[in-house]
Image (cartoon, rainbow, N blue to C red; front, side, top):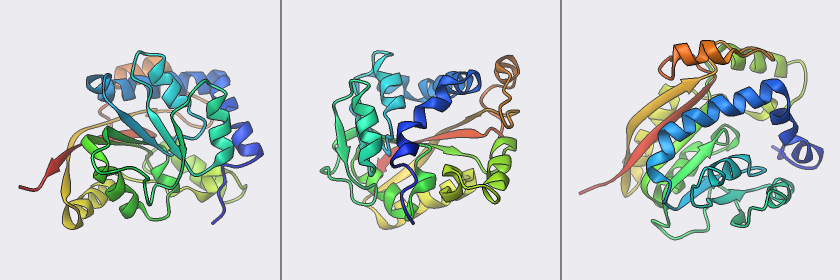
Length: 230
């Protein structure tokens, strides 16, 4: 499968977050991520599939130590450099070019959906992580992603190559890591947002009232603690 995040797609990727809908999405998703990541503000973070670096910059702007970002697409990394980000690596999630325990936390932020071998990618992220692995993903069981999936059947988009995930599938992947790796993953937190969003609609006040604990949010994130086998 060809990489959908090259050329024009890479250059225009950030334009979504410049729309009124995109700005609200960024705000809500950012609140959720901060809920999970604030304890690691001083830590070494790795974002696997960092794309244009929009989340790396989001964290850096909020006084996190600048994360390291890895992406397969050179075009996406060029866009990330334009944001002033420097800790950028061209590479694949399936073979991370870092020694064991190089980072406190590894992050997938809507990137694991696009990886062909998810088991291997999560195993690699666990290998290089000392404290935790965070997976933020597009929840298949949500209004917004059901719409995106249906639309992609008739019109090609970046979502055409995405494999929307569920919490159950992610837990199965985490169990695989424990079965074959030197470490295991223990689910510590699971949060969602964008519960009532569809097409270009989102209501920030409604999302605030629902909170982060609905199983139907389009943007879901799981924080796994890394545990070593004794």
